[in-house]
Image 1 (cartoon, chains in turn purple, cyan, red, green):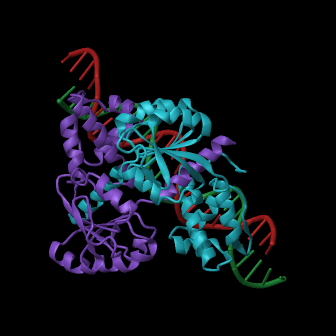
Image 2 (cartoon, chains in turn yellow, blue, green, purple; image 1 turned 60 degrees about the horizontal axis):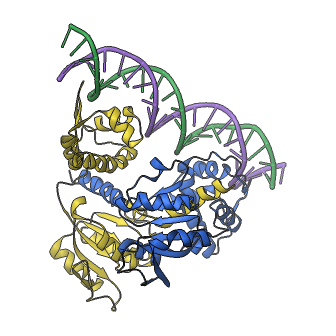
Image 3 (cartoon, rainbow over the protein chains, first blue to last red; image 1 turned 180 degrees about the vertical axis):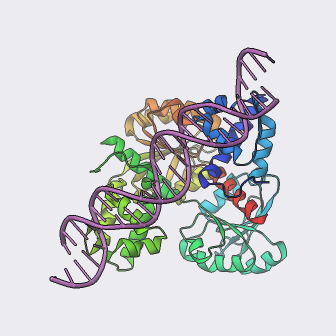
Length: 212
Length: 212
DNA sequence: TAGATTGTTAATCGATTAACAATC
DNA sequence: TAGATTGTTAATCGATTAACAATC
């Protein structure tokens, strides 16, 4: 449906934020909005909003603005919120548990269907209403269930071996909380890295600057 | 120490990654490295590395390269890793627990000194070797301990009230996992947002594109 | 129709890359 | 000294903002 399939990453990264704001507008009974009013609420320029949206098509009406509900649906479709990608989570430590319990996967286009961990202490335990499986079962499980996405909440050292298996099993996407550089070894993988430590250090930098 | 205090955000966001790579090099006994070799390992251009580093000063030696250990130290100093900022965590649900337990605060310039939650069920419990306090105690605690940073693992609705208190108590920085827009209400706050849901939706977008 | 606001082109701004003189 | 590699300036590229014609 994309007008142009070479959408730049900055544009893509703004879409979820548009989606959130539109959801809130919808909730508050706002049925239509101009790029100018939305720009004030989101603290960006009206020009940028119109540029961003026009990467995907003309969703507005001249002289009138955008229908909130329709725009919400369109952006949802663009982001793939209209389908559920089968997903497994690897590494059920503190972080993996939090990710599994805290994130609302369904409303973000994913269906979490399995949890895996190396540690015998954890295998058999329950998280997010699922039993934790041994990574020994990973390949058999993938062949049967065909998950397309894997969440990596494992240490850097454990990652290469598991990613190799996952790629072989047909997993295409990775939500990667580890510091293992997946793209370096698998350039065709679809990877979204979340480096929370880096984010924290960025905050440290800004606090250090302000202090001086 | 900054040569120029208007360093752009893209440069800042690359620093933690340099820091990680330099740490690994150090661990592997590499004592010096050229921008060219580092660029190959990090998959960016040598030019960019030299530009980035020269925002802060000439850390290299012409004809020779960079001393790994010295560069690691310098970047650590720039990022504020040479001091510990007192930090409190608000909201000890799944996410807050994971953040509290999983993140190595000390090695990233922060010292986690207190946990707070609204829920009477959680107050008194222990996480990361600390007792969870009631948010009723927040102001008294802050007056005594003077934390400078707060981690928000609370719902959007709970945030405005708590942030108001925290700002009044002198908290300057926020590692914000909530969807509350702190800067909108407190333009002088130092804020690093972590929107995991947005990250997941970005992955969904890319997986959707690849599928077509 | 007149007013409003989009869609889109043009101008500006900033970040990245290339080139090269300085120098170890 | 010759070779290597930085620090820095210049060129390019891309993203954001401004302007305005199209049109509802």
